[in-house]
Image (cartoon, rainbow, N blue to C red; front, side, top):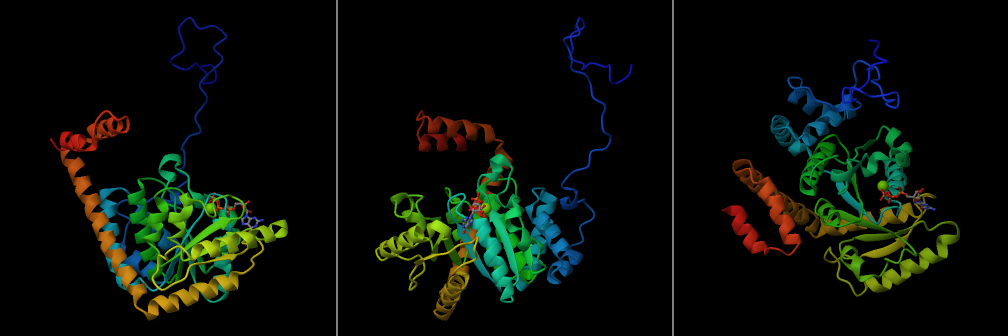
Amino acid sequence: MCPKDRKPEWTPDNAGKEFASRVIEGRGEVKSTRSHHTLRSGEIDLQALERGVLSGNRTLLSKAITLVESNSPRHQHLAQDLVTMLLPYSGNSLRIGITGTPGAGKSTFIESFGLFLILQGHKVAALAIDPSSSISKGSILGDKTRMEELSRHPSSFIRPSPSSGILGGVARKTRETIILCEAAGYDIILIETVGVGQSEITVRSLSDFFLLIQIAGAGDELQGIKKGIIELADLILINKADGDNIAQAETAASELNNALHYLSSYTEGWKTEALTCSALQKTNLDEILKRIQSFTQHTKGDGSFEKRRQLQNVQWFETLLQEAIIGEFFARNQKQSTYRNLKEQISQGLISPAKALNLLLK
Ligand SMILES: Nc1nc2c(ncn2[C@@H]2O[C@H](COP(=O)(O)OP(=O)(O)OP(=O)(O)O)[C@@H](O)[C@H]2O)c(=O)[nH]1
Ligand SMILES: [Mg+2]
């Protein structure tokens, strides 16, 4: 029978003409759209990857990051070796976390500020942590269109967020990606995250400097709900201060500056300020850089820069330990479905967390 006339196998025997569906001829081999990212076993040469990353080869850096992001146990083993090999060459950068409500202009800011930093002689890597990506399998940096010019520049490296896994796992991958980028010579690492939930705290724990991008009139300048995030920031930008929006942005910034007097700073001895800017019109970028430079000078001067990194490393170790213990527990007990059921019961108020724990560990 000609494939065009063949009906799907689930079609009833007595099917009439109303069964219009038919089997469409296959297109032959389907090529993966991620083929350039796939790692074939036996093809991974750690020494070559190490040399490639150290020489700043972006293709090999991408490949090394793909190794770090892989969930396969064999790849994870190799990734740990690679990260260990490159660790001595890392650390020599400024890690800037960037958060803010969706649409505030984070990606546009990274495009403008990234190019501005490159003009000052820096090499810039832009990474992302996207807490929603585990559900949507999307990525906030998927829209490379917002960073078109930056992504084309030879002194930049842009990497979308790891596209699967829980936030903890995504954070581990991003942390290791930072190390690889530093070893490849990137001295400014910009890490974007959407300002929702736990991800800000995660990005704060990866950053030396934390930037919050807000917009005027969104109603979140002074709300209590945002207070916690404001207290994490080292600098706050009121973005989109352009066109008719300039006066409103100035007012929002000065209100915020008043409020900041009463809030404690995350970084001791540092006064968090609010500035206006336009990521689109590239205004005030030099002021922003001045604040960042003065922050670095201050924290390096009093030793808190180094101290923060050391603390972050200890926290990282603790997180890895927790992940490993939990991973081991489930590997031994196959209790994932019990765990999920208990969580459901807890959320419905049917069982107390302590009782659920007893049942899980039984
Ligand atoms: N007028 C004006 N528009 C801007 C500015 N910065 C960003 N936008 C616009 O705001 C929209 C969102 O910008 P993005 O850079 O994608 O915002 P984002 O914060 O990265 O958004 P998510 O990644 O979705 O959270 C786009 O249409 C931008 O062109 C600015 O300074 N001025
Ligand atoms: Mg974005």
